[in-house]
Length: 312
Image (cartoon, rainbow, N blue to C red; front, side, top):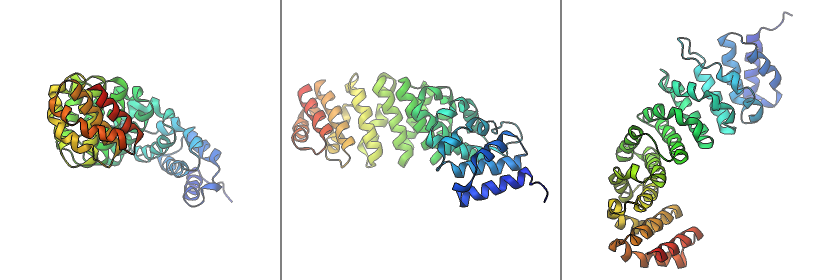
């Protein structure tokens, strides 16, 4: 019987990874990948690795460099899709081996294929969640990616939120782009955009003061995610610029009765800061805050409510 070709071996490994992953010899997969055969062989190997990642995340992460080497910005981009799929599986387990790929992933945010753009955005969001400083160079590309609808915008905003929390702010043009999504976005896109502004406000309130009306609109509307995140941003701005967010008091009082304890915590913090700054409407709301200090089921809500009352 003639020796099996690399393509035959790769397709067999891929098939077994999908149907019986425990029978796959990982050393054989890695050796084939390092041997640099044809794109058709590599495509099966990359799909094989993606299928194995759940059961053997450490093993798959060990060949992250080889997977990343298949990414391309040239005319021949046929492996970008299976490579980004594989990198997404690695990123879920441990994004550390992917840090060096940030420049390439940022470049792929402009790839012609939607699946590649979406995969690269997701991988960058996972890297940013653990290593936000490593993703700072990709901020302009991520800000551009927020203009896409759906999951890509959500993941781009997630990455920007992590970077903003680490660095303390974002470039002004990126903040403006995010504010537009916080104003006009829907669902998780809007919630994540408001979270980005809140993260910047926590570190540098002045950088978000000009977008205070966006946070005021979000906290007054009915979607729980944006309201909770907006209350956090309002609390941060109230620390230094209370007049810019004083109009939020009625909505913050409503949030004291929200089901989500995070919303109640943020509302207590914001009302406490506004009351301590002399806002009469916030001061009038402290009886409702005091009731939470005594009776709320969440210990952090009770703590923040007690602080708010004492701070005023």
